[in-house]
Length: 188
Image (tube, rainbow, N blue to C red; front, top):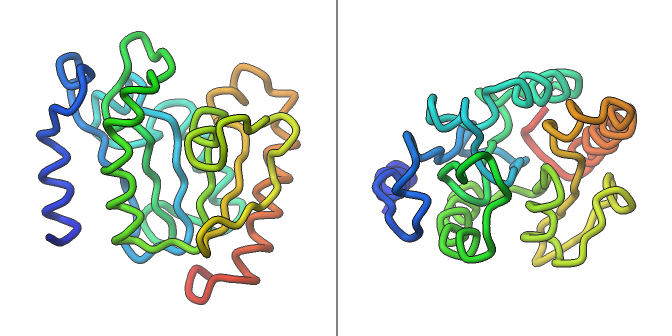
């Protein structure tokens, strides 16, 4: 199976009840040879409508942060989510929904082979780094797991609700840029 076949299988997924209310599966977007993978918790309304991750207001903010450190979803990073279908009313994905969808993300990881994974928000960090991850205390720090570096920062939607955290998030992206320069061979 190649990456395109994986995507086609994911687009018809029926592993959990979220398939009943979705408009589109949001598989992911970006460079398939990306050394940096960003992972959010799940699609919102705009993402569900367009079938692409982070395209609403929070996506516009994410793109500004990416641009500031010379990353671009069409050129040198990849963006995905823990769950590929929108939870109703944008609620947090339930543990069983995350568990049902995690094999898709694992396969994306297997194909892309990123050196750095950036968890966008608490849900992604608790799913991928560790269950008791405290985003307000541990954001911007790197953790090594199985030869891959993990970092978490605030979810862009949380920054829109709490703009006072934007300087901390921007600092996280500066730290990320330095780590990319240190460990990645072709991102820049």
